[in-house]
Image (cartoon, rainbow, N blue to C red; front, side, top):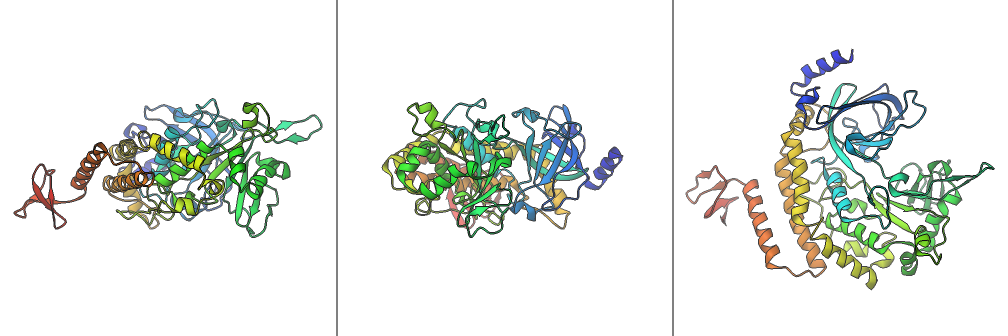
Length: 487
């Protein structure tokens, strides 16, 4: 029956192939019985994942819709996917597409991101630039890992998605809950996620009915991501103390890692991620809340420190929460805003000399590596080429062009990436200017070369006689947009 439905779907979708042989992107087909809608709870089903080489993995799984903003885009829903045993009674770990073995996965629809890659590019930059301040079995990774694929839900095509792992206890190497013989538990590792709509009244401090959500202060609500089943004062007190009593430099320096905070601030600044500069879209974690921060052994004391981890970076690189900024119009939060309006726990540090020195030094290091213009361009262009050369971008846009309800996207992906690159060049220079980095001749020449190449890609050119130049302009004077340009 599924084969017949797939064949019918092929006829309707013309070039959308169910055969993995025609895809350079992995192909994921998922099945479940529930109707797709905002707030859809977990529904039992199955998944079939075919990688680029044709290898197939089939597993039982259950699915639910996810995301607050994403709930407005059910034509391309974001989903949580949990792999299960055949009877659905227990979790089942699997290493999908070469990523770490786990049972809980995210199928990110990227429905408000017109280039379907901002969150992934930003996390790739973060993972290259910043590591946890302690060792883990995942090389200290402090962000998600993801792979792009094309998705079918119940044999209906839905376009390009990103399959990614989650920020969780295993990734961050948090200590598991200790269960005692008398049935009581001791919470040790804790993972808190900022921003939630799971509690309606956020005007007064308090807990949700099951204590999985805590409003620590006015409109400052957090979810207990781990251990979510053991909410209560024991789990919440470290975060409450930090927010309510920790608004001083000394407290932050004692309970947080300054380099970790500086790395996070630089990520948000350099990529202008306005939606992440506040009390949302980030995690705070502690490896073991039972440890003593004043322990004379630094290794033990450090287990009580907080770590910040970014989340939901889809408004990076000039994007906006509703996808309304594109075609050269991008967000560009002024640098001073990252100091005048800094959120906790960074707010007490914005005038601290020690922190500001670390912040500048980390930018000096990052601008030569993960944040360098060539490095950022390589990431954008690699995904651009993957989407275009695999045919996935055309398949997705052709499909949604024929639908009444559409997610956010651009038809000309190559042009949009060029415009975003142009934006990032300017942003990079703003960062340098803010931190007082001298403008060397080498960087000036590099940027001039980049801008000339971008101009060639984005405009029609005419010679001085008014004749259109069909090839890329070489040395000489040309007219573009009514202006003379020298090459």
